Amino acid sequence: MSRRPEPVQVIKQRRDATLQKLVAGVPYIQFLGIQIDRRGDELTAVLPYADKLIGNPMLPAIHGGVTAAFLEVTAIVELSWAMIWEDMEAGRVDEDAPRIQLPKTIDFTVDYLRSGLPRDAYARARVNRSGRRYASVHVETWQDNRSRLFAQATGHFLMPPRDG
Image 1 (cartoon, one colour):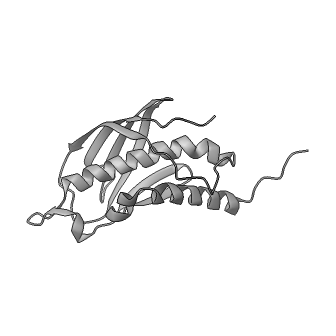
Image 2: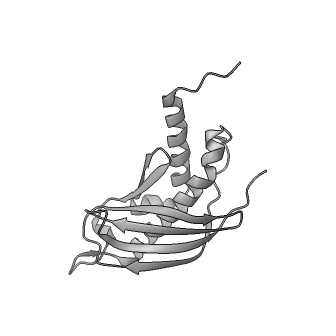
Image 3: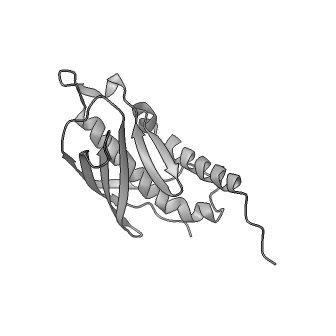
């Protein structure tokens, strides 16, 4: 006898709660105002425009450090999400567990392609390789047009030990 599938709303709530817990564990995400938009298992990071993000008020342009941080946060959240997806879908993510352990940056290289304008920015990460100890991720960020990137990055990360 097979179990009845969970209602879609229950699955959606579990996914959203897990993502919220992941994001809440990084205070810098709240400081920058980064939001994570989830559609199924695909994540898009959103950096809503704020005056505090401007580095050069004469242009004005988003600060390069903010751009790099946005890209790095996007990569780490994507890696963490991919890491916990299987456990979450199997119902093995404990709501009362301590915060999720995040990958640690080994190196992170940013290519600044043009100035980030004073408007919302979006980013998506693609995991190129993910093993038990090491992962490689590519991230792209854009503003109005997905095909006109203003920065991209490649990072290598040390993966946290897995339980079990």
